[in-house]
Every structure is written in structure tokens, then in C-alpha cells.
Length: 171
Ligand SMILES: Cc1cc2nc3c(=O)[nH]c(=O)nc-3n(C[C@H](O)[C@H](O)[C@H](O)COP(=O)(O)O)c2cc1C
Image (cartoon, rainbow, N blue to C red):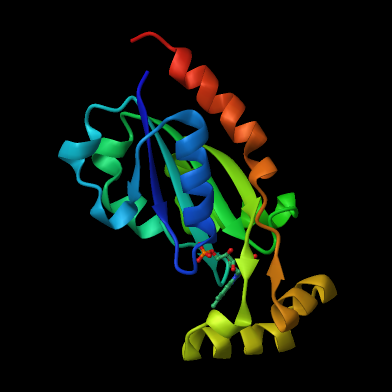
């Protein structure tokens, strides 16, 4: 089965994973906003990559908007965030970003992202500053205060195993 990677990234970490995945798995990739139904129709499976902001998967609106034809595909989703290792938090983010009939159709892989405070827009800096004062979890507060870089090629291992299996499916 043929597949394609679509990604949405603001500061580059989700895009970095999309590029690694494309290289390793020999798959095409493109920015989510540029993907049109006619380009995607030939592919049996889609891997959608998205950054997370304020507890929301940023690709969610696009996914909902295109759900009438996306639902025919096999679907994988990966996200980039600071709270990637908190399974409960990730489940909540997925469920609050997408309705159950959509979120339940994806196999989901939360991946570790990057926050470089020097790169942020003014408003993103304000949001991160306010978040660093108000989130209850101390580790999250520290990440927001100082930034972090957890982007790591090795984190794609599990996702690549699933992609390998999808590629072997004969249609
Ligand atoms: C304004 C803003 C809000 C964010 N909100 C969250 C959040 O709610 N939870 C989280 O785990 N990470 C959050 N992050 C961290 C991003 O998910 C992380 O930096 C991610 O790697 C960004 O992806 P990108 O480089 O592809 O844009 C936030 C970052 C910014 C700038």
C-alpha cells in the first residue's frame, strides 16, 4: 500500500520528524495546508504530523474539514509537544481536539518536540509565559520557562514499524 506524510509545523520540530520519516521510509511528504483531495486520492495510508499548542492538536481543524474523504484511508497521527511522555495528558489532548469517531480512527504517536524561546512570536511568548505561571505540573512549568529540545530521530522507531507493515499490505 502506498502512503504519504502530511505535516503541520510552526517552529520546525514536526517538520523535522516528517523529513526523517520520509527519508527512512521512502515516502513523499508535504505541508498539510497544501494537500488537496486529488493529490491524496492515490494513497492508501496517510501519516499526519502536527504540533500541539495550548492543549490542542493544530492539524485538528484540517482533519475535521476533510474528514468526508480522509475517513476512507488508513490513518496514523504523530504530534510534537513538551508533554509527549504523559500518556494521560496525550489522550486528553487527542480527545479534546477531535470528536471520538475521528480520534478513534487514528493510531496515535506522541513525539517529543522542541521549544526555543528565542524563536517565538510575541504572542506565543506571552502564551508560554502565562502558561509557565499557571500550569499545575512543576516539570511542565520548568519546560515552559526554560525551553527544551527533545527532538530525536530514534523516537520514530514505533511509528516506522507500523509504516513498514502498512507498506507491505497488498491492495
Ligand atoms: C504558544 C505555545 C503553546 C504550546 N502549548 C503546548 C501545550 O499545551 N502542551 C505541550 O505539551 N506543548 C506545548 N507547546 C510546545 C510545542 O508543542 C512544541 O514546542 C512543539 O515541538 C512545536 O512544534 P513545531 O516545532 O513543529 O511547531 C506549546 C508551544 C507554544 C509556542
